[in-house]
Length: 161
Image (cartoon, rainbow, N blue to C red):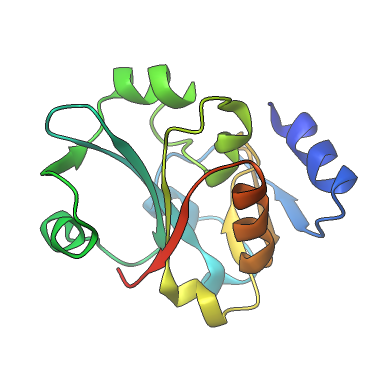
């Protein structure tokens, strides 16, 4: 799904959101240069894979946090993790680096990628994500995002990162 199809999907499913269009951004440093509302809701998305490339994971964390992959591995029972290559990202999610978003799971009919959400967002009123294109940001309720992804058939875990 592209941006307009994603927004249409959200509208059809009664998921309320706020949207701001902006220049393409590829990382959090570029995102910080844009004057967007709700900076406390900024999220960054990491696509990681196990060392044997059998399993991949999508992690969404607070924008200014760094994730410790060794700690994540120990707490979530995975094999050794590393960031997925651009080729892996393209193959699994159809994305280019810098445009990862949990809403991309709308495009995957195999439901093979577990989604992990930073528990920081559990008590926040909103989370910021791209609507399948990095030229816009939408804010929605974290619980709406969780329900949407679960309804698609994906495992969702809310964990401290």
